[in-house]
Amino acid sequence: MPEPSQPPAKRRSGGTFTATTRAASPVVGKALEAGIVILYIGLLTTTLYAGAIPEYRSAAAQEVADRTLADASAELRAAIPHNATAVNATTRLELPRTIGSSAYTIRVTSGRLVLEHPHPSVGGKTPLALPESVETVDGHWDSQESANVRVRDSPNGLVVRLGGEGS
Image 1: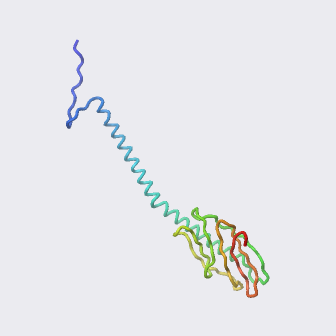
Image 2: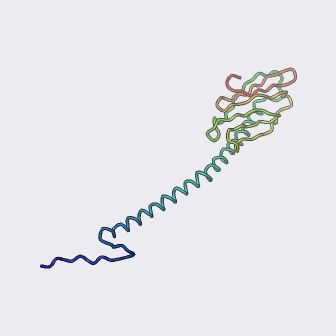
Image 3: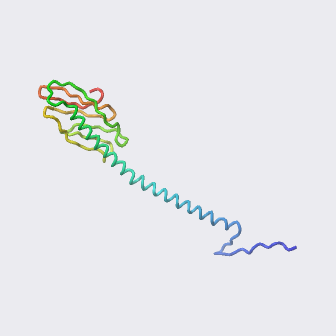
């Protein structure tokens, strides 16, 4: 009985295809497809984390800083009694502990409240609109401490001091 013959090997660009080498073609194709998908996801992730997301976080932090400064200014105004002569009062304010995951400071400089933040694109200033009876305003609030406003009388008017827990 004659032995079954194998199909003739096909020649193509100097190599031969056999049953074992033909199976490599789909595997290589799928590996290339997977590589392209991984490359696409990597580029998309890099683009988002290097550009769009940090800009959005900075913009959101600046919005929170603006609202915090406006609220602090309004609460400071509300803590000062109008037309009072003998005052010795302390008022506690509620301010966020962090802005953009970082601590910050609010201080009085040249008649303005100034928010100082470690990120260069976050911060701000707002003018103080206080009664004429206020002689001086000084001090600062650290966001990691409770924010207090201490108002006391002096011979020339009211003295307002911003401070933390011990002021």
